[in-house]
Image 1 (cartoon, rainbow, N blue to C red):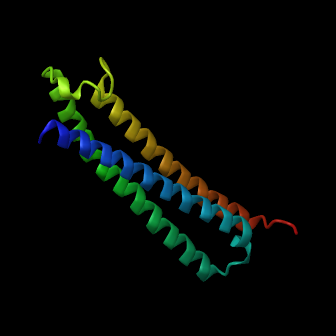
Image 2 (cartoon, rainbow, N blue to C red):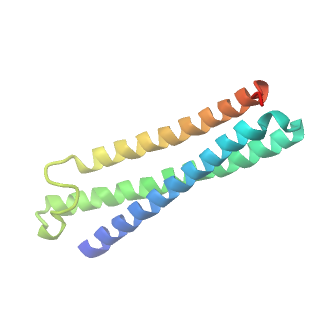
Length: 136
């Protein structure tokens, strides 16, 4: 893979991951708003359907993000190897003197943990609002 292909692929993945994360957050906030407005009015079968649907979509997003992130961590390692070989074409990526792979993998793990914690918090909020209906 050439330097251009590595840099281009990495840039495309960053764009993809940002869009993916924004969609994840959008769905999360839609679920929170729906929880606040209607969770206490849903029947038990509807609660099962809503929770199952939300879980399936959000877990798919988390798993897909984690899977693609593992591939990009490998690409980051390849870019790090190319930079270590004094490749002047990749000097602009990731700054100089940084632990490329370690910092990248840490960021991915933190973002995945945040996504999972957000999912769990949204479920807790749903059940809280279900058992504590708001007053009108």
